[in-house]
Length: 101
Image 1: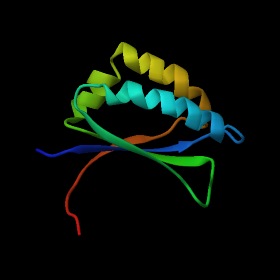
Image 2: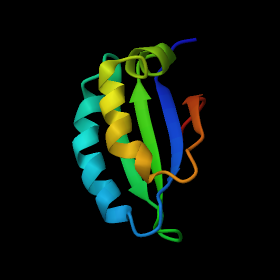
Image 3: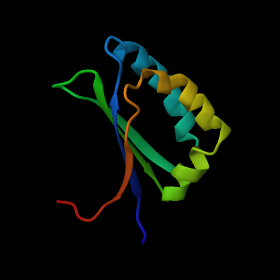
Image 4: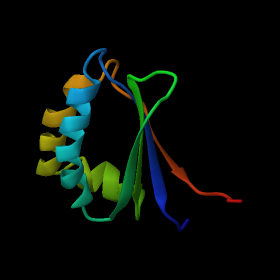
């Protein structure tokens, strides 16, 4: 099956840590954007729950992200920068576009 893979992660950031998380993410996005197969990402903050973020990452193939990026030394730096902010650890799922309007 061809097409862009979209990773979806809802990030629940520990209360009071949103500013620090956004600052760390500003650094971390340079790490993931250099990964093979990476296309783009967006990080959005929830209006109703300001400690909740939606991370969407587009990549060429599922393996680019699940094996390539997560298996890399760069991912260890990503983890060091960001994983301390999550409570609980996010569920990460991958999607392929079916239709648009």
